[in-house]
Amino acid sequence: MSTPKSTIRTTITKTVVLQRLIVSLALAIGTALLIILTSFQSSAILVTSASPPLKPHPLPPTLTQWQDSTNSGDYFSQVSPTQVGYLVWSQFPIRVYVESTQAVNSKQAEDWVKTVSQAVQEWSVYLPLAIVEQPKDADITIVRKTPPLQTSPGSKILRARSAQTTYEMYVSKNNLLSHRFRILLSPSQTGQYLLAATRHEFGHALGIWGHSPLPSDALYFSQVRNSPPISARDVNTLKLVYEQPTSLGWSVGTFSVKNSHET
Image (tube, rainbow, N blue to C red):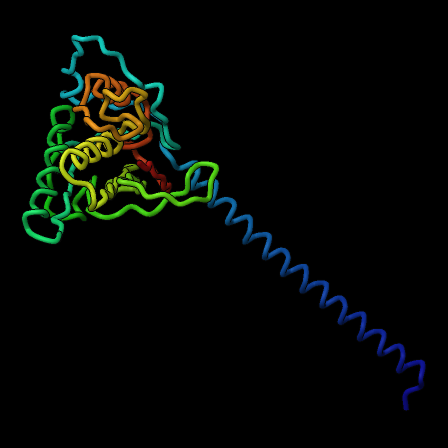
């Protein structure tokens, strides 16, 4: 028969053993979590360090040949580089898809495609472009769709807009850091207003990620009554952009980023 003292001793021993087991288990779980968290941190570092260095590409022949005899200047200082440098295309022709829209009537749909295509062709003088039949094959996709509402700077008031241009990065099959653009054009835009909006947004998609302060340029920050054609200043700015370093078009591991430019 066990005495009260031996019973107490046994109970204490069991309690101590149980506490040690709990401490050991907690330590093991904590160590495992630390290993897991460390692994995630290492992965994040690898993802960040995988982006290629900034290097310029050779100028495409169309821009190499461009000379501004008027010495009109440029607005390159208004163009912002991104996290991967300047938004330069290095594989040509740049593939463009123009949505075959289903409008109220076939004439309206035909006019929309014709006007948008005209603006695209205007830019093809300066960079090689090719129209493709499927959006999956496109570098730049143009869609007849109302852009989402946007809040004004410093205000919570939502406002409508006529166009929106966004881009996203991805790694191509040949392991190059690549990008693609999507342009939304409001269905309410027609005629010269649609032409001007397409001309403007397509300039963004070609790499002019900023606005001109002069209303005589296609990339002027606001829409004007008499929309200007692509100016010498627009092309001078485009040429300067393509002389800048970028990570786009160079070999990469894993990278992902999204951004947008809205008008």
